[in-house]
Length: 215
Image (cartoon, rainbow, N blue to C red):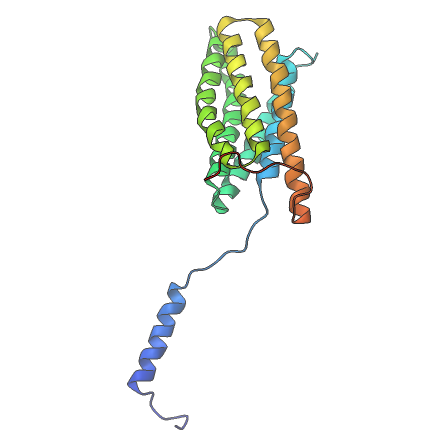
């Protein structure tokens, strides 16, 4: 067939079919780095700062507040969005929710708390609501790893104790909640550090344990 010869009908159909398949072909985006260590680190640091205040360890003001908006809030929310990209429904839900928690708590402290007739009661309800969310996430964390389960376990204890402390206006219970919150931050930092080095090495160097709930 010369350069000027017409294309036969069968060849034309093959060209059209190839063009359609090219248009419909699924575009696979490159994998992204695991955002979980970032989300855990953001959660840990902000939890540590607020818990140190609740425990009565600090002499300053609200050191946690700026980090609640920028790090525990925004950075953790971004980690949640990247977990959606990784199709990790557990990580996406957890990081996005607690990113929103820190942003919401920071805005409450800035805009509402000083004008509330009973801010402790408000905080009790906020902590109770997130304890309810955390309860089922604690159950599903058994499908992830021991380290992640311990993060949600200590967080559950922190939220329940603080909720009781705020409702009862008990300084001693609030201090206890702060101490448990510091333990929560320590566990989250451990899980974050493990995620960083294990991701760098491509294998498990720092142990996090396997799923507790296995099918």
